[in-house]
Length: 335
Image (tube, rainbow, N blue to C red; front, side, top):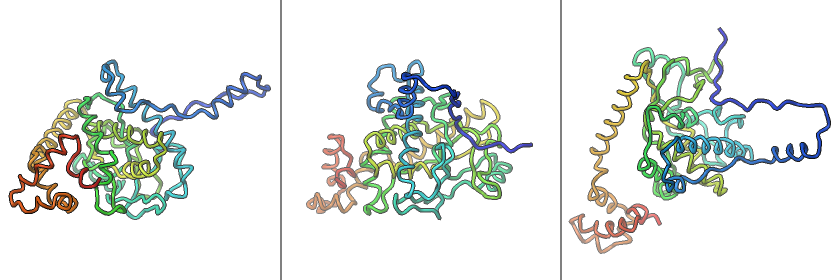
């Protein structure tokens, strides 16, 4: 049997050629099409201001448009900066390989800290547990399919902060170690195990024959596309690089789910697990947040007199004032 090729997106159909000399209008149209740039979508902030954002498939259309724009504009960006990446820039973003820990690109400071997908391990894990988890790329995921994970405006608003410049700054006190990342494994549905293939014969790399349906976490991927779209439109190269770095190491949890009930149960289990983790971490407590913020050296320098208080609740009062101004304690410390 012929081996299935790992292609996620279909290329545009070829244009029919003619040996006849083109007229003036045809020549102008041809020149225009060659110079035509991908159309940038609305920002997610502008989208959320639209009353019918989640109606009539408008959000799905916007996600598709944002993805198409990013895929085209990012390839152009990478080709202009091909010396700063450790791989040959492919014709499609879907063929960009995950970034291994052993790989690096000094120019763009690309680096990874997760193990990438291994085909032999994937097959073994599927046969024993019907699931597999490792790092892939954002292009292995389908952010447009809302069959299982339909997102709300509040989810998009919450996920947007993951890719903000402030999030990057406060990720580390050392500029060289700062990064943004997909920190939670994103669950996806796999109906046929053959959707995963070897990227190259004789090697352990993995590619997928089509984007995988997400059981949860679409808001995180959608807002990544929004952030990357903004960075490319604004020619913010620093932000584009660290967002690209995040896209090359996405924790993905594949689950072999043969029917709809299994998919629904898997989605529910993920939501319940995240809810329990959220509560267990104290993320819903302002006082826990303030307690942690007061331990930062930058915070203690800004409010030295507060160090005289043994009661950390007293130390958290300035934190409350900054939160009222829509600025988090950590944003205040790393300004």
